[in-house]
Amino acid sequence: MQSTMEQLPDARPLVENLLDRALVGRASDVHIEPVAEGYELKFRIDGLLQRDETLSRQVGEALVNCLMVMGRLLTYRRDIPQEGRMPVGTAHHGTVELRLSVIPTLHGLRAVVRMPAELLGPHSLADLSLPEHALNFLYSFASAEQGLLAITGPAGSGKTTTVYALLQYIQTHAPGTSIISLEDPIERGLAGVTQIEITPFGEFGYARALKSILRQDPQVLALGEIRDAQTASLAVEAALTGHRLICTMHAGSPAAAISRWMEMGIERYQITASVHGILNQRLLRRKTGEKYHGRVPVAQCAWMDSALRGAIAAEGDMDMINEVINGQSGFRSLADLGQELIANGSTDAAEVQRVLGPQGRG
Image (cartoon, rainbow, N blue to C red; front, side):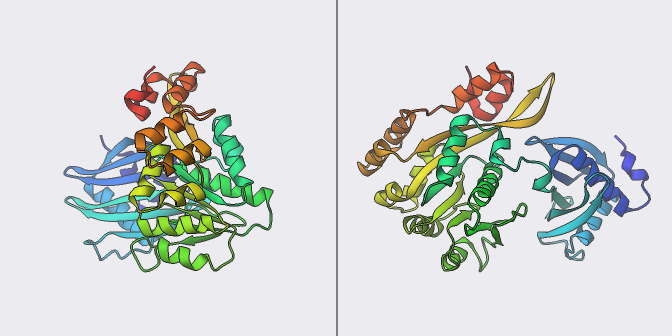
């Protein structure tokens, strides 16, 4: 397939046209991928990567080079990964700031552009379309005095969007609260929140930054993700010393999150004393007529109640902890929530099974 974009006179209008199409199409990412025959252009829409068209090698390389110039990357370095940011003027959204990542591959430089999160996802808790029990769970944390809230799920499950909406809610409903977030990278700006971008594998990682900001008189802290034992230990310590702390984790269930903390060396009594609760979520594509458009979340909540504290303190294994969580009042399995969305027409069985796997079958 020959690209219609190849007729454009130079690379800058070509790039701006491409990015504007991505924004209009609600793409979260644009992939410009070198292959043996040239370059493939792909858009990630509603969580799925979709092939848009094939470009000649000449046009693909011109696209990547232009993006590197716009992102102030080193165009003469073709042998190393690079990352940058770039302001881009678009026809429908004015000037927006995008993130760019390039990496060398067998067939040339591969580029991925991350589109601005503020134009794609909902901003408030009310707009997230979370089930009522999950919203009430987040509201309870927002009014708590201290404790750790973990938001879990795989990559692309909407964890960061939920964190941002919760921080915005706290800032709006409790003005004067000192809120600091550590992020890798900062997805979008939040009014009233001190946002700090860290370098997770450099000198200014989560652990070092968290130690420092605890001296900055914060009341609410947000961590982009807990990846290691040192960060987990500091997060628990912060929650134990009077702070509200929000973190994200790659865990498939509330019980799996608790198990991960234990594997990281967090003592059971520290978990029971510091954790407010765990929200586990996924995103399903919303069915509109014969097509998918947008996404709708499913989410389950685990409270640190007396029964769960007892199971953890009694050195219960993951199966026992999972059984206790499943027995909590109001707890719903993701499969049941998925079936509910099928029943009310929000999505279909194929999408539930795609995201939730065999557990999502009715």
